[in-house]
Image (cartoon, rainbow, N blue to C red):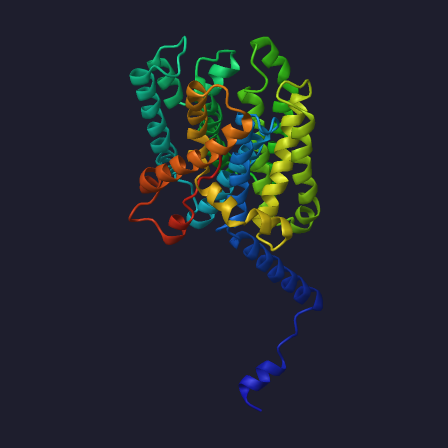
Length: 388
């Protein structure tokens, strides 16, 4: 017998308990690696959600769907989910978050379309006398360009005309400014995901149910209240953390109910309801469930519906649709004030699609794409939410 064989023959066998522990450790590490390697990638259903949400908002403004304002709830939940997911993925790839690069990406995505809107708005005011207001033009342009219109409307002012809808863009931009910093701080403190999720849930409860007393003292309008809407965005952030742990079976079970609840909440409540705060919270939660379902990427009936090409196309140009449609509708009503809601809808939707596609193709996409960016980034050029 050789020396090697002798050594092998007398090598002690590891205890069974140690072997089992090592095996479990390897399996745990493998599961963790698989989980951490999950990336959002391209989810056609998310484009469909954007498209459906912007259609709801447009139909609300024409009077065709009085509860179409729930589309804003969907946008906020979707924005919180996407931004949080992308921040986690960037940290996973690079070990850190570049706040400068993040803010630059946001500016490249949001500012060109907004500037185009403001230029057209200024021309309409100065050359054609449209969009009159008790605020001077420069003040309306400044409050919009610096993303302050959510606070303008929350304090009871309404001088913005068709720029009123930029309140939600302002809400999202303020969220983009604060949330990455808070998340980086939590990571620096080595907070585990379950801790971050717990803090998010606690923050949502506080923002939605305990701060109304403060808002009442400050005389803030509940519907436009930035505090409550920040809570809706945080619900989307919490959904992003849940998605990283793949609660697929729960999502598949509850997402159809969530979709039905979005329509039910919108149908039985309006934006002046006494139950507005519970509706805002419930709307964002149901929207988050729907977003989680789309993020699974499975081939369910709901995901196939959300992935239909018309909805995905509307989702791709949803930022432009949201930006321009109210200005187009206002001009229509100036020249043809007696249009029925059916005629308004029939004219507004195709005209808005044409304007939004032109803006996306010739202006917005030129800033989103850049020579040094990878292929995946160029593919996922569509907006992240209503204003993203």
